[in-house]
Image (cartoon, rainbow, N blue to C red; front, top):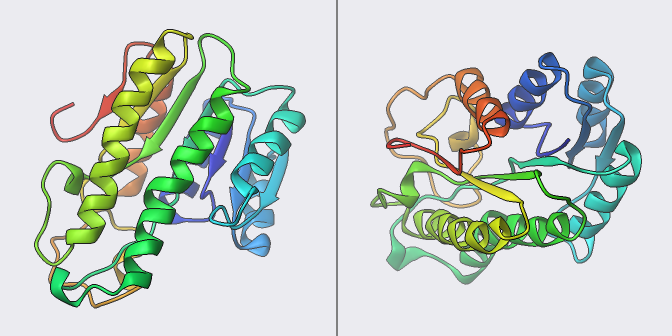
Length: 219
């Protein structure tokens, strides 16, 4: 199984939960040092450092993971960025980065994964609750996550014919520290974030459940 974003709080929790259930892992992260540390901790088959927004990198990461594991039957994409501020103040660079990382990266990973997976495989993409409940002060972030949810639902219908399941996960605000690392703006007052470990369990359950295609506030 491939987990992208494994050096983040949620991605790391997902990787640990899957490892505890016996999954053989190939892990991705941007920070090679942190990636090597979690790969060693979990006994991962591969640690693949990459900036997935760079041309050709999603395809390279998928190929390297498939080679290391002898094929891929599951993958979780846990990468993302956030930005805050009114839509009127949104600059072009922030909008482009939000769409690149939150939509284009998982879409390109999904495309690359689908080309290598057999029937019975699963692709999990992490969207957010703002896909269902767009939030003032987070218009562009909400739009990027809503676009990913739309992509997942449509791609899931297409890939179902090939026996590949796509799962769209829409967690609420989690205690991952992401709000403290925005690419633009400053976080408003937010409620206490939920425990990412609990959501990692829900995501691992979704991987194991052949009927699951959505995990969110109403799923």
